[in-house]
Length: 240
Image (cartoon, rainbow, N blue to C red):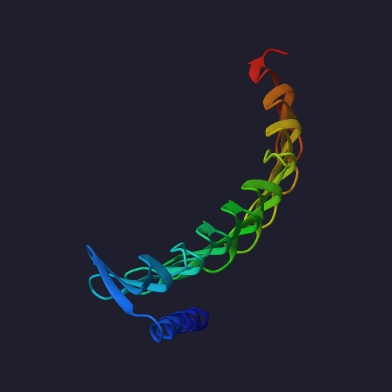
């Protein structure tokens, strides 16, 4: 457990002690789960701590005076490694949310009134960013990027306010060389499409119309010599 999580756990458990000076801490058991905290008027209040049948810490939650989850919540696996960090506002997920696998951070997001809002990031096990972008009302907007685990960009794409891909999309090799470039409109490929060879020259080039291959598509060798021409109509190959 790292220092930040250790301090959070310390202050949460300290909170139970503060409540205990005025109220009775009770222990409940349901199946294999043991819960310890304060009940007032039949509802959970303050900090509650949950353990499994082996007395291993499972999660810590906070409740308001109405018995609704409010504030910080954290969950652990059987090895004591953190799995989830959530923040609640009167029973609704709201605030920073972090996910872990075997204690290693895998994603971070921000939720407002139950919807993803703002920056969203996914991480590799080595801590490097896997993908990053922005949500608005649970919808992807703006620029979204994905990376290889060595830190080099894998692809970039754009989303409009409706969550549809709109604009340039580019793919790269793990060494940083561009592999393909094309444009989206209303979530469909539109206009010029280009694939590149290892030397950066054009390997394939053609046109999309509403997501369908249209017109002449050309293939080239590494020297730039045209190898093949294929004509399409509504994504179906036709004879020139």
